[in-house]
Image 1 (cartoon, helix red, strand yellow):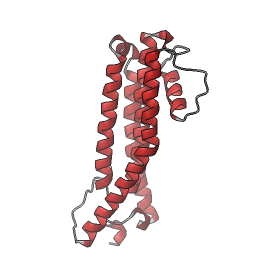
Image 2 (cartoon, helix red, strand yellow; image 1 turned 135 degrees about the vertical axis):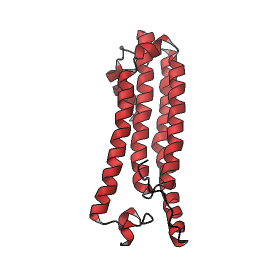
Image 3 (cartoon, helix red, strand yellow; image 1 turned 120 degrees about the vertical axis):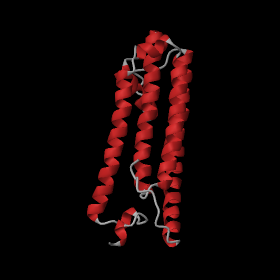
Image 4 (cartoon, one colour; image 1 turned 180 degrees about the horizontal axis):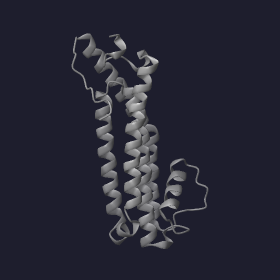
Length: 198
């Protein structure tokens, strides 16, 4: 068939129907990833995390986030359409970042209700995390305890990395993936990852 069916073809070279297929696959993969993250957030009780040390949960969450970043970078470079993969990966990773810190804040609030200016359930914890991420900071909820302030500070540092660093890294990964595909096509390499969505 035409070049647009070649796994080495750039997304911009695809026909309208092929673009819809690639985007549909990306949206489905992203929706599934978000559904898994949200279900885990909903079913993990903040009370159980609070009974232990919230710092352990936060450390586990950060390690999980780092692992997901590494995996998504690897998949972006190898994806037939790395630009699409990079965009969806960033969306999923930012959501995971929000959920990790939200669950930590909810657990901290359960273990110490005075940690914040008002007790945080999971919904309020998401709200607080997103206002911190967006640097809006309405001031209606704030960290009171030293521990809570340190965790918020860690989140702000991660937010800077997410907004500036991750975007740049994934743009670079997409360019690397595109260059890899171009080299493979120029060298007559017919083997490529067909699992764009895995």
